[in-house]
Image 1 (cartoon, rainbow, N blue to C red):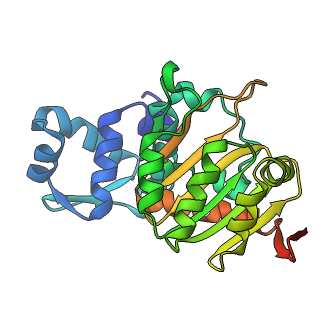
Image 2: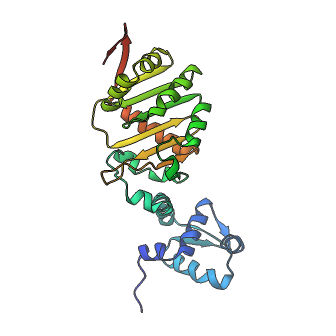
Image 3: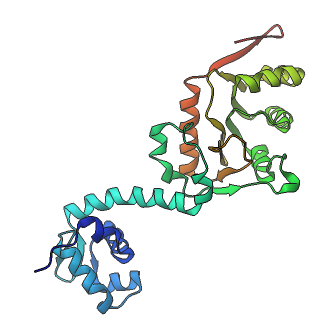
Length: 269
């Protein structure tokens, strides 16, 4: 009598078995429903059902199949893992070159919420320009929260433009970025800081994150690469789960930030 196949191998070695378990997560299914969903015939699926029944991951009741208590527990934990693997697999070259130091642990475990993200990267002729999709969506946004540890001159006029539209805006800047903003664009900085619906904060620490922007329309995340040089590549999404992830990241950074106020044209930190 041969030894039983291990649960790890049983679940993860066969994509068909994984798909079947996930399908049964929503409730009991008949053999006809299973065959239709998996696009297989009975000859192909019955051996897989037997293997899962033998290891008590599914239960047969009459002509229907459903997850056992153990099967439900496994599927509940399996889905986040598969989702995380999918995020990394879809953009493997991007993620494999990125440093995770700037992302807190509680958000690393929620990376699967970024599965809808697309990479935006400028072509060589527009390497130092803001992405048109970012600019277009930012100008249409009614609420903006943004953190940045790098300075882009085009953002100065862009933030002024959305401020004049009375867009609720909260900006967190690292000390080098804030200093350059004040030194090279003093008048624009003073004007921006005077708007009641704009809040400016200083991030006092050495950030390991390049930037994150979240609005009511989109989410943009720029992660520093593991190497020393900066790559102009970002993750972009308009899906609610990505916006929530980005908002939670901004809230985490905001806890360390110090408000910047303007009094009689003097900056008080």
